[in-house]
Image 1 (cartoon, rainbow, N blue to C red):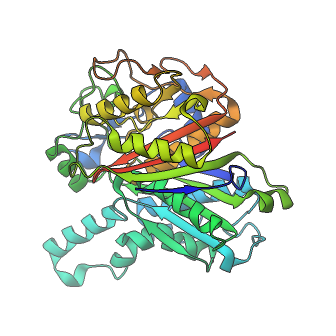
Image 2: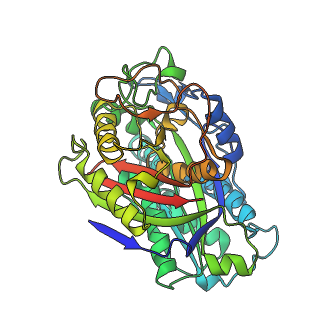
Length: 416
């Protein structure tokens, strides 16, 4: 179990960007979420698998670099999200004009559960069908997790500081943000570009998750298949996407008059040590991570106004998370929402996407609804779940939960 205590005013978010099934920008994603509509559709690439539906970004070919066709979808999503985040932070890049930074003092920390898995699957099919001479020389650079995430982003930005990859399943993106904050707090960099990306809506991943019993079988009505905390939930829907947050020390951001969108007040990560895929039923690991993150933020449970939940729509995961929230916030229940009803489960990108959405909630005072939630089950009742329409809530302190296979729990505490 680990935690880091920080000065609540020390590290701030100065830029956010996202690519999801809800749109090619964080703004478009936010609008989709506030409309409360699911984006899952029948996926031609997944036909023949037990769950041929997914939530894919609308323009997977986009990327702000030349020869983007060489890159896996996850890398293209990441580069597009990074361009948006850096522009908001006042650090135009990708050829718009030279960024005003010391490249040796810029860290790139990106999480991904699988890296360029679509490139790997395509290469394997070619190997089996046509032999080793048919492989592209770009196979390794397309699928290796370190390259398909942090490596290619650092190359595109020409940064020479730390370029690191985190892989903790569905907590990867949140862990990347936490690790970037560690580098800033330690003085190892002056600017950190952190986030997550994944593109796992592939035949192999879909078949494997279905075999594990994790995916929704509601394939006849794909837009309503992802149902976080709902009585009729039966698993998640594979999603794809990326998000990037730009982090800086508050004094550095103020010196260059950059927008402080939110403060990263605390973070923590724990392990369940319970089961390879199932969470601790009582949510003990998640509860410990929340307690440690709040201690780092010098805050108590009664101060938390909002929780952006992991909320995948799996029977076991939602039950454990609901149990943890009910116990932690029994006196003053915060508003709760899950983006996965609309966007599907973006795997290693989810923690970063949801952190960016939590920043947007703090900025706007609005909590988007959880799509496709009709009624709670007996194991998820008692949450102040936002459904149907956005809620004007105005939280000052919010938590973003991430949970992953392997028992990984990561919590980010963000202040307005």
